[in-house]
Picture (cartoon, rainbow, N blue to C red):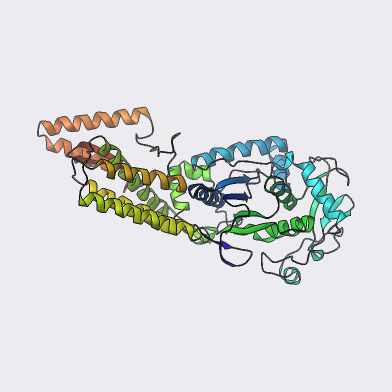
Length: 484
């Protein structure tokens, strides 16, 4: 398995710190708002990476934090007239609701900043004792130029950063590049007691304290969006290695940006797209499929056409799985040359899937293997009244195994795919569809084909494709030509 390591700027063979185990830390949300599509990409990407390590047989410890105290939270709470802790708790629960809709598994640990103040204070004290940090009127700053490796992740020197960046002017700092580890409290703000007076942590120190607590030094993978490379992850490396004297992380992985119609998603452009708004328009499975349709390090452009393509892809997958489930009830224990060829093809596609994922988690190529199996399965089952039980079972087993990695569909307690929206979403709609199909079947029995065709065509206009097969009537959802 090879991973692209941002720290070295190249693909490297994956060699874990501890044989057979993987320790992963991913930066989670700052809980002052609902997550947007850019946040969701990182969440889905690293959930998939974690799932693939499990698929490969590793024991995985996965940590994702919540920043539940921050300037953004304080300002938002002031705007809404709410307590900052209550506001952070509200948006933490909202995150879980959105992540659940995208079939994201919970982390092994979801640490919160507010629950790790002692660890943060202890880490800052160590940095002061080792000469890498200084106190200035209740604030504590990290002295960037004291750490000789600063800039190794972002590939920039401190002098270049100072020349090319907007640096906040603060007379308390000894150097404009120095960053806050601890902030003295101001009137009306949450605070904790510390050796330097009342205050709260800076943003960067929290992830160092929590990742070191749960994963130790030299853990395997630290992940997040490309926007976190500088300054957040650069600062994490500096303060962690300055405090411990040991390498902080073995592999740094960063996902690319989301664009909206080829423009970067940003507040200034007013094109921030919240996940919960998208979930009102699209199934969570389709949104996750879209997010995995491009290699995680590449930019990903969002528009309605791409989401419709994801929905069509999802419909293909669902239809194939429905065919397999139907075929299982009439399968027989007979194998011939066609069956042996099919089983051999499944093994080829399994190997192709794993080769794609082993190559820096290339989900786009992995999905190509999935769709190839859809085509192979559909071709095999086409008009086959008595399919072979071994073929049906092996194909279904492979789809379940791949879904355990990609997470497109929810799973039952035994790891089998659970098909969403097999009905139309509510009992009334499902009952009306059953009634229409029954009326159509009666019309066909009476040879009233005009009425039968009218029902079929009307349902198609509504996004329901009706198919008459040797095994009976079957329907599936399609992307309607009339829009959503």
